[in-house]
Length: 68
Image (cartoon, rainbow, N blue to C red; front, side, top):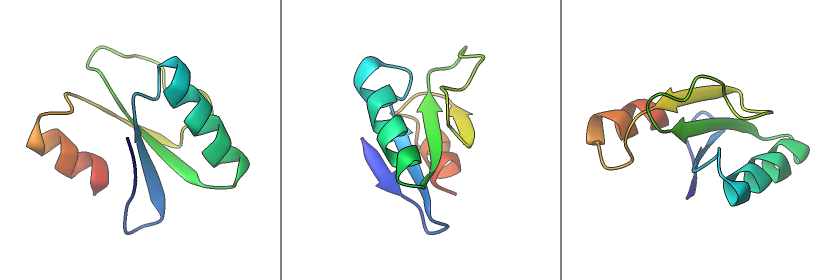
């Protein structure tokens, strides 16, 4: 899933997977700022990610933080 926030940041879920990483690379190549929502326990952000939020996609609190 990809969503743009009000601040112009693009949120990518699944950014550490194969397809998500390709999406991140394409967005970064197009000069988008990218934020990744990753599973808890992920220590390193995927390459070319501006910021990273750890948590579960089904947790509303995490989603609010991710799109803030």
